[in-house]
Length: 307
Image (cartoon, rainbow, N blue to C red; front, side):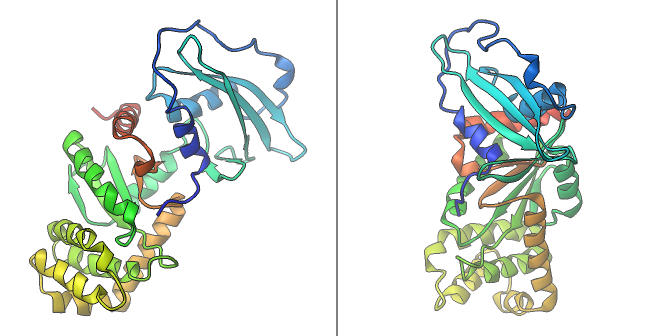
């Protein structure tokens, strides 16, 4: 389900529409004025590393930190950045955000709190390496860990399955994990579907993917009257016993497993589905053209030293 895009997502998309063009002057921005650098933290180097983490996949994108200013709140700094692309007639855009006293978070209007720092995704990456326990396929190594947070009743998640299959083909060295994030306030059958998924995975990891594919195929039939029928049919399609999986799905242990998956999504900062975490970097994949998404995955892998 789409929600309002967070700050990082907006920054990805804001410039994604800029045209590719011939080389621009080395520095299309105004000169730096030191009077706008009144805060000691963050440093310009840290901000540059942060922005490179977001935008380094696009060699056509140009940016410059124009101000790092102290505010009335101790430890909170206002950062202003100019950005453009390498086209001769490209427009310069400006945006600002605020960094928090801990040096690990930032905030901007309408975006909530986002990771910040020279390596803004490192903590989320480490957390997902430890706690992402959903059904998986691909490489055994977690060097390139792609975690898909999805809701089986979410239409956008259904659309994203083609993208996930293409990613698996293009990145055979990635470990891909499906992590359930049922949005129960808007999708009444999502939790039950996730519970079935937990039990299918528990019995046979490889059976999960034909199960979830079949659920998505029949997603429109996930009504109060037909949910059990659809889920049991998907279990049968996956080669397992639907009665056994249905019994497992109602146990306290299964409910706890789904709740833990939801908690992991919330702790990672996931605010919409489908969301793809690429070594901790959250990307709203249905909002990003596939070729751009592919570049972002490849860039993150390179930045993390993955061959």
